[in-house]
Length: 416
Image 1: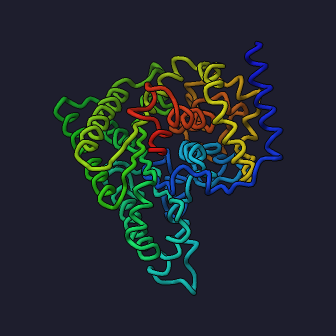
Image 2 (image 1 turned 90 degrees about the horizontal axis):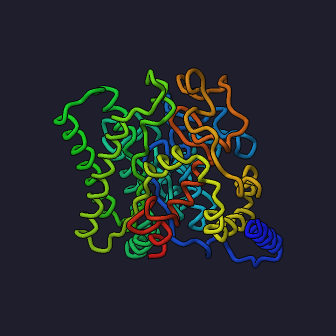
Image 3 (image 1 turned 90 degrees about the vertical axis):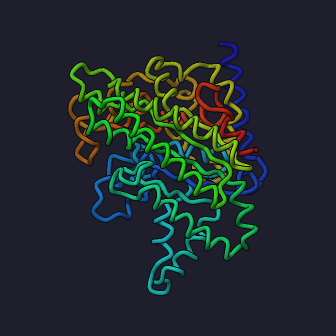
């Protein structure tokens, strides 16, 4: 308890000093020039809001219930997601904006043609852009939203505009120091497993080879466009999502789906190891969402260990200071000091928002019931994590132990 009291006293002292902290600009605290995000709903911060007719959207209640005004932003969460917390750790106020919002905000009667829109988007995204789209996968055949190839095409168009405004050399130098965050693969596994509940070894091998080969192509394309620092989040323990539990008569995790995720993750690991030895200047870090979710399910109270807090207290404070400077105190509204010291999950099987068995036979809609103790739930809806889970993921991936991130941490990647 003495250690706990000292930690609390230290944190309170640091918070008190915020009022007299220097007015150093936020930009000077950024560890990288920009962050560019690609992937699926685990990283989407609102691109799908701009897809008319798409059902893969989260721009309605109760999504965003813990954001200011309980505003649904398009994040598949009750609040912030992993991309936000990782960006915060790197000195930003949150995830870069959804790319389609930049194009949309650059349009209008006076800016009606594509070149003008792209120029406006390039100016608005000098600190990065988020291209992730819920429902997409590594394979272009997965989903019906913004596939990975299209996401990269959007980035390529933006890069051309950046090169025009900065010069090609300056744009290349900036991109070489920026972070390229990729979170994809789960939807590919979902689609394959939904169509092949008992696949033979040949079908499994062909599917995994197709995903890894396509992943390889995407990474090489990004590299040729100037990317050098790849921050990768692997496929989660998807067989333990509430939805798949609800489909299993025993209510347990669907292990064949977890094994498929593990096989893909092994391929992703080998892929980046090989590419880094072939591509000059390439650096990478792979965060294991699979290992983190597995650990939290097996040890739901591990999140509240004091040693975890003491290891990251300096970083928690840095985020708090930055949040206050940026006017984003809401990041911490549901993360009081007590919560930080007593974090831990009491529910790791059911969704917070939804309906039916495990609250996951129906999605989270405005008519759904949702839990009040969201900080104690691992899952927000039938597939996605809560803000509390995403916060832990951000800490584990940014500067956590080797079982959650390697061969270097995201912090080391940002500083490399």
